[in-house]
Length: 254
Image (cartoon, rainbow, N blue to C red; front, top):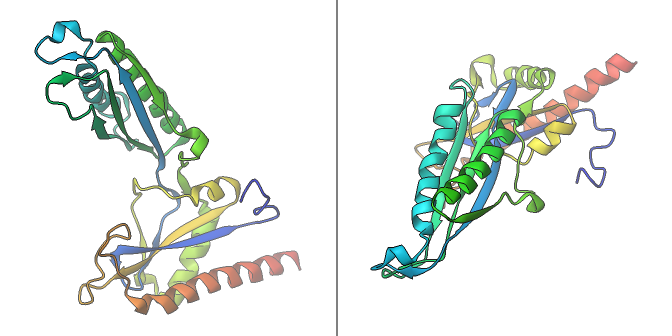
């Protein structure tokens, strides 16, 4: 969309997302970084297949991959500033299903998150270095894919301070100041972040939590449901944010 010019001459952009963490009708956001940048990786670690009973005739990628997984945990715990939230999680490990054979390859993969582009790209660099060099320690080779051609690297979602303040004022008028919350940053990611890199933006949440209805599950859960009482709140918030922004700009230019 950006490449096709969808954001040309756009001055501001806003987005809403339902949240099961906040009661129905509560609106929340924060200035600055709100959601983390997100990337994924897949590493193929190659050795030499052999019988499990004669491991000295093999070059064991299981051992190399295991060492890589352990070493990856040190990137955040020992290299990152504790005040700069980051995540590296290995979520897949596949070395085949034969209980009597050391495989020739092992595939591991996972995700990494950070709130700044600098930290994010540092994680990317270090993940590749750790996997490749740990593989060499165990006489294996490794190749790491970050799926960059598939656009699965998401930058952090960062709220412009002026756009955030605009959302806060509108929300306070609509639902009352007591029903607006400054929410903490989250390690989740959002493709709206691509827009926020180009145009001053504000991303905000609208609560849908209603324990009586069972609206308590994350949007990624098969049990997710929405308290439909939030629909007029969300519609009014979106419409008023846009209308008031346009009216204020018209006043400035008049």
